[in-house]
Amino acid sequence: MSLGMISLAFGTLKFISPFKDWYAAQIKTSGLPTAAYSLGMAGEIVVGIAFLFPFFVGIGDKRKRVLLILASILFSIMMISAAIVHLVPGVPADVLPLKIKPPVIPLFFLCVAIFNLVQIIKTKQI
Image 1 (cartoon, helix red, strand yellow):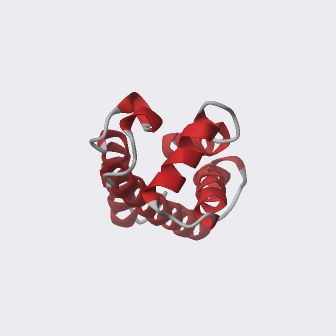
Image 2 (spheres, helix red, strand yellow):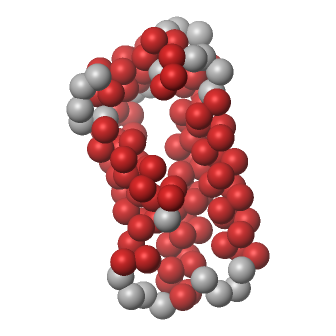
């Protein structure tokens, strides 16, 4: 549930300055295509909702499990992408979270997402 709130929060913050400006600069200076701007925001929001949805809507355990596994995998892919953006030499530290180049935040959340994924897979029921 925490990953859902975090993903949803970071996705929606990208609509508000200064986060919007920082995110735009990250996309532009990393060499990613312009479409990555919208896809990144939409991805974080959709994954956030996917994490939260099973807890607020009564769905079966099997569907809940599948949705949480999918959300964890997609969140992991986004965190890998974010870590790569941090490592691109052309991306200045002043447009990154905490204003640091090492991808501390994305790698931390990648570890949390992987841990979450492993726990869901190991648990037969949710």
